[in-house]
Length: 264
Image (cartoon, rainbow, N blue to C red):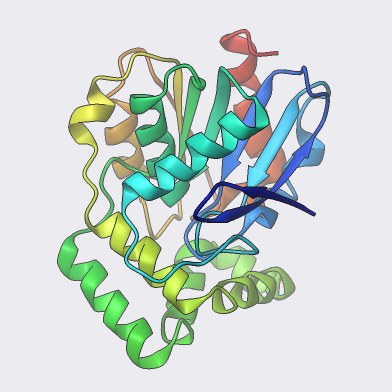
C-alpha cells in the first residue's frame, strides 16, 4: 500500500513496472477507486510504468469535507506526479478523471505528453442536474443513486450475464465516502473546460462506448474534436466503464495510440 503525503491530503496510489519506463497514469471515475483499472492492466504491453491513484474523497485517499473544486483535483494529480518524479506521461482519465486530465494538460505540459479522454467531456451535465444528485445523496446516501448508476455504467448484456461484476461495482460505489462523492460532484458541476481544451496541442485519444448512459459517444466525440489532430475510438456493447466490461478491446485502442505517438 502506497500513500503519498501531498500536504493537505494523503493519496493512495499504485506504481508498478520499471521506474524508467514510459509512464501511463490512470485517473478513476466518480464513485470508483483505482481498482477500476484492474482488468485492463494484464492486457497492456510490458515495459510501461503504470501509475494509478485514488482521487480525493475516494478509495483510501483522504476525504476532506466538501466542497471540492476542479483545481483541487488537478493540483492533487500534479503534486502526486511531481512527488513520483514523473514527466511526459500519457494520462488516461475516465469520466471525472478525464476532466482532471484535460485540466492537467492545460496547466502542466511538462507532465503530460499524451492524453486519453475516456467516457468524459469538457463539461458533463449542468448545475441543476448535479444539484439534484447532490441533494439526493444528502437525503438518502449514495444508495439513492446506486441502481440508476449501474444502468449507466454497464450494458444491458453485462447487467444480465455478469451480475457479480455489477454487484462488486455497486459495492464500490456505495462504500465511497458520502462527502467525498458530493465534493467531486460539486467540482464537476462548476467545471467547463471547452476553451482550455480547445487550446491543447498534444496527442489526444477519445474513447467512448455505445451504451454509455453518463457520457454518450457524441459528447465524447465533441470534446475530443476540440483538440486538433485528435483521434476517436468507439467501443461497442459497453457502458460508462468499458475498461471493466471490455478490457481487451480497451487495451487494444490504448496500445495502438501509445504506438502511434511513440510512447512504446
